[in-house]
Amino acid sequence: MRTSERAAFTALTSGNGVSLVAANPGPDLAAAGYVESELRAVGVAAALHGDAAAAYATRVVVRRPAAGGSGTLVVEWLNVSSGQDAAPDWTYLGEEVVRRGHAWAGVSAQVVGVEGGPPRVATGVTLQGLKELDPQRYGSLAHPGDDYCHDIYTQVARGLAADLGATCVLAIGESQSAYALTTYLELVHSSAGLFDGFLVHSRGGGALHTDAPTPIRTDHAAPVMVVQTEGDLFGRLSYLPARQPDAERLRVWEIAGAAHADLFQIGAFESFLGCPDPVNRGQQAYVVRAALRWLEGWARGGPAAPAAPRLEVSGDSFVVDGVGNVRGGVRTPVVDAPADVLSGYAAPGASVICALFGRTLPLPSPLWESQADYLAAYTAATDAAIAAGFVLAEDRDAVLAEARSL
Image (cartoon, rainbow, N blue to C red; front, side, top):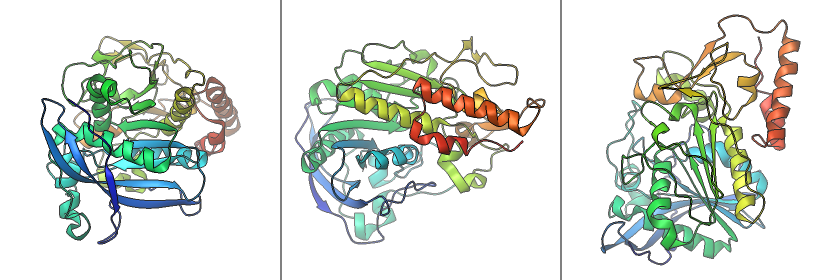
């Protein structure tokens, strides 16, 4: 693969407005002094394999401060597992992006998002690619196929960084997009040389170019944060065979009591999933925000992110504590001061989508003598997570507000 130059942009303004799947829309952009725009990005991309090149026209959604800003550009590889572009990491990270004054861009890097195609995960809802969804707005887009998606992502990010005057460019992606970033780190980053850091969130054991277990390369200068949930290690994602130790420019965080997707992601639409149990109510959102904060500082020459213990595994299962929550890993208040049993996995026989959302079950027996005792333990666990660097002080009030009523 040879990496081409930067994309060129024109505004997309017709049709029905910006299309981007989000059950939880995130912070109020206008109230935060942000503006949103949607751009048509064009160029000629190089294939990942071989010497072919092809023209493309895709789209990118940009959210940035109307004035000023941090100089950091966070570029999310939009997820197409549902058959339509979604921005799961914006859902988790939007609050951190806005309060820090970063610019964010969501790139339609893959063919399914633009041209349509079958979903990788059945949701029970028929979704469409951009061109079918809104022909007036997106009819001029054209994607040559996923052999070109990594160079498309590079060119769009490079063009935006130049236009915005970014001084730090971070690549982020969750789930299927994390597979793509694993491939990017394996085969592309050395020649592209664009990104200053990577947040690889909830990857499986393989990559976009291979199903074989693929550890993250550790010979790059750009720091890499890999954030995994309990639900990623076994089953459909099967991350465990690719599990690796930390390195000089790599940190791997595994979050106890977290599922691949959760209530924070799905919000009020939980009932539409039709899952047999309440979905996971873990707190990965706050850990992912902390990871982004550490990554940006690290990429700008600051200290490395803290190391975290791995989740405790015995054979093909987790080691659990007395109430049924997994031991080890990054600890959040809902597992260190539990009012529920939080699993990254749904009940046996649940649908694929429910399996990704895990479940939340009652404690097997009462644990706290009073609400006051529980709240004291929960507050102490919150402050411990902040002191360890796995939750941000700015999120303390939000975390405390998630304490359960016994």
